[in-house]
Image (cartoon, rainbow, N blue to C red; front, side):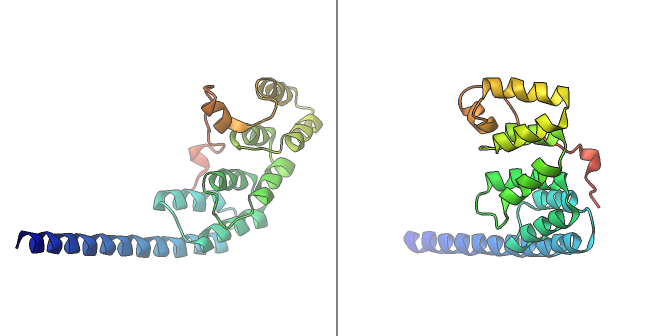
Length: 181
């Protein structure tokens, strides 16, 4: 009798857990549809979409693709930077992180380039280095050289954290630039 009661409780718990999973899945689909609509129809909305994606706690593959398409259409280096970092920590995302990184390196600011150098696991060091040197920005060149002196391979902050050195990933975009509407 006790065994039957325990089995029934376990079955009820499994049904409740599955219901919660199904509810969460529906929420994510609904949020994904809303974010895709924003990315598809609002120019310069990539950061807003990435923020809402983060708040939702995930999204469908189509959501990531729509955000990437918005970034490419707008040539949005800040959005490209943030989505590339997100792709780095979530390797199965259906986006071309290389394309995003190249956009930041080629069209971004030196601050963005230096952030890529420090925050990507395996940044394109030579490409970043050449773009910063071509900019003739003494401060950025000095910061880059100082960083590369302690980390000549440019392994990024993940390597430095695991080797005991402290560095943190800092968002490039101030919170005031993210539209939460």
